[in-house]
Image 1 (cartoon, rainbow, N blue to C red):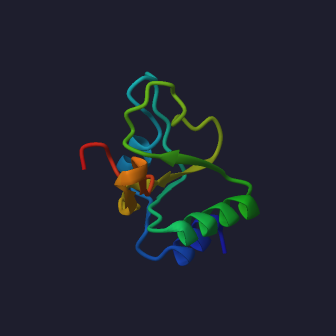
Image 2: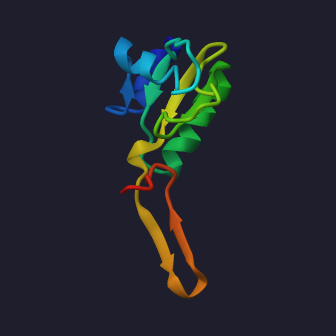
Length: 113
């Protein structure tokens, strides 16, 4: 079984291999070039992130975390074979402690949400 088949089996319904999404995840707002990633994975919890990192290590593939894609540093541009770990589905508020001025959220929660 090849690496993409293994990835799709590991994450049914959570892997996008379309050219448009792979290209969108291979650039940000600051870097002028775009290069498609191998696949886009949409984890929905910590366990999914752990599984994705285990898969990437086993197959020797880099992992690029993806938030909103608005950064300016060029870090979303894959310099070698990589998957994009799109954290947008991990968008819950986990804990609110007003007395401590603390709010614990998942990494996909945006400021506007």
